[in-house]
Length: 262
Image 1: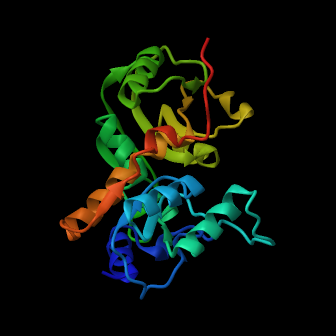
Image 2: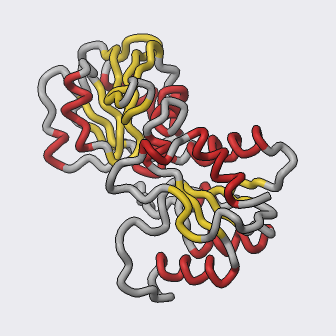
């Protein structure tokens, strides 16, 4: 098995051509011709993930977030990114990321959110190309809910410790927009599509001042996107059922955001 065989599976699911211009999806460390004996899938490429790959005998890791986003002026082992780069190269571990590519396919990040919430009449929120790819999902709740009921429903479906929310609507909510990860910039699109509720992450303070009839929820970046790890593993195993592919055993503990609940 070669790196190119694994990347072909991932790019069939989430093509590199659809990534955002600022993104760095794709093969970040390694060569397409490198031999691969095992693949470990995680959410972020950290030194701990590379170490876990070594321990499992994997010479490739696949993550949602790219290890390298922007230009790097120095590689320092004291910095988490630098340490992961050094460790991967020393250990001969190839590193691949499917970031906005997986955000923009309907079976990817936001689609997984919609399935978890059992939304109906699902469509892409910000369609591109022929309408089959794009950011976000919009659909209908299984039954109309007030804002408080929606908060309880979303908390239960995602198993959340906390939700940041604008003032809960008292009128029934039917139409819901979703965008995994940092989706504050797409609030106007959610509103223009007629959503009464928008669920995303990394919403800034002033965006919680919402107009009448509209509500936002910030459920956390990691929490909104983490299901993509299972999807990546499933895609690899569908194509190569006997190949050594693993989900990180530390995934549930890998969220860098920690919550203190009184």
